[in-house]
Amino acid sequence: MHSVEQIQKMPVVAPATGKVIAEIEETPLHEVPLFYQQGRKAFIGWSGLSIAERLQYFKKLKQLMVDEMDEIARIVSEDTGKVLTEAIVADIMPTLDAMDHIIRHASKILSRQKVKTPLLLIGKKSFIEYMPRGVVLVISPWNYPLQLAMVPMLSALAGGNSVILKPSEVTPLVGKCIQDLFKRSGFPAGTVQVAHGGKEVGAAFTEGKPDYIFFTGSVRTGKIIQQQAAKDLIPTTLELGGKDPMIVFSDADLERAAKAAAWGAFTNSGQVCMSAERLYVERPIYGRFLELLKHEVRSLNQGTNEDADVGSMTFPAQKEVVKAQLDEALARGAKLETGLKPSEWKDGMFLPPTIVTQVEQDMKIIQEETFGPLLPVVPFDNEDEAVGLANGTVYGLNASVWTKDKAKARRVASQLVTGAVVINDVIITVANHGLPFGGTKESGIGRYHSEAGLRIFCHEKAIMEDMGLMKSEIQWYPYKGKYPLFLNLFKNYFSEKKNWLAFAKNYLALLKNNK
Ligand code: ADP
Image 1: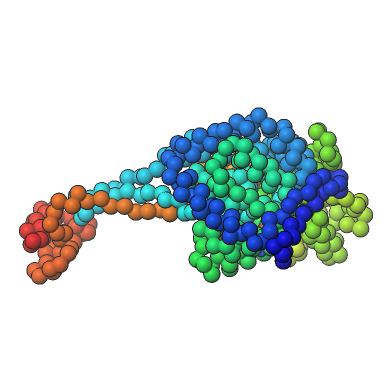
Image 2: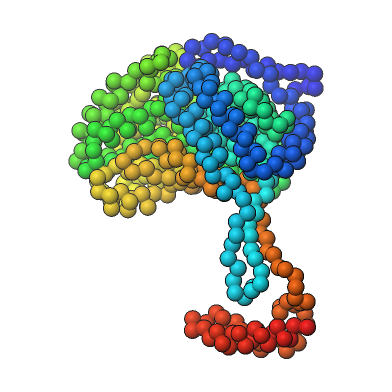
């Protein structure tokens, strides 16, 4: 705990080089109520703007990010250890694309929608309105520190909420960069606030009674947050981990699938909730496919330069998770196909892209999220077995199915208990902002992106309008003499063989009775 006077400074270490590159002031815990006060004050003005007015700020922000794309990519790359190409393709692009999507569609998605009114309620009109919730707390992780913070922030802001972001302490420079971008785009004071610090700061904000919590991170922390939120009945979205299977059938384009497996498993050093973490290959092509994959993986170029393919790990503790999983697998007889034993790893944060075979379904490497450059490869004999293996973990975020047989691909996709499936590609559903994003089972609760992703940050309000011209309604008091009329009315209305004449007669009789 920090005293009122003390301001803690967090050193920022570049994972790829180990060098301290900056210092960030941690938000003192006693300031948490102040953040909420400012957020609530700003909410009044921000929610009072029309959606079109709010989107004007989005346009400024988007242009600023376009102008400074290279600078932002370098901050993301330095703070995470990911290569520049991945910073721009997988962190900046999805953020800009989400902004584009929101700018184009938010007005329609969030404005009042007319809903049909049934005949029984004749004379009334029905609508849904989307009312912002208030102050939304976004807690974000370190693997895609830009998009996984900014996309929920923008989605919440579009609906009229103010936002407090608590970015990951592992990548605080990106958090600072986001704060700076919103400020320079002229968002009104207090509309977007960024709090810096680790889990204590995150926990203090969670306890500060936000109106919604949007969390992306580990299953462990997600469960803690959900418990805290339950105490105050705060709604949440939880975007958690994955152990995504890739299923390759014999009739797939094997060259393409091998390239996809290498990229899907090792992009961002495997620190992707949707990375391919288990590869299931149909037995007749298992040997050939493994050779193609090893060839791909051996040609990868690790480093920090502009042409590098694979960067470093971001979070030192994650290295230990990878090590523990690999050690257990090797101790139980698994075989290294590429990469090194953990005891042979070099110091620093670069881990070799590692392919492992001869693994068992109950090993950690199959059951637990790795979030590192480790890919177990397992043969299977038929479609049912592949589906069973793929569904055999507590996770269900994304998956991929590889075959030229469209019917088989769709059949398998339908049986996978996941939030998304990609056919003959990997990960890519996340790049279409029009599709929902989220998990089943322990991969999370809720969806964002798409229409739902804007509407979750609003209360859906049902509205019915009546001109108020009639003195009374048929279902109001007094009930005298109404029962037989209602009985006949509903029998004729709900019956498969409707008698509209009888319906009208009873309705008119009820109206007459309606004094
Ligand atoms: P990851 O290892 O993917 O970063 P975490 O779940 O540890 O996953 O962290 C994700 C985010 O949650 C980070 O911003 C972190 O500071 C924050 N966090 C960690 N623990 C808590 C907690 N108990 N309450 C609120 N936020 C937390």
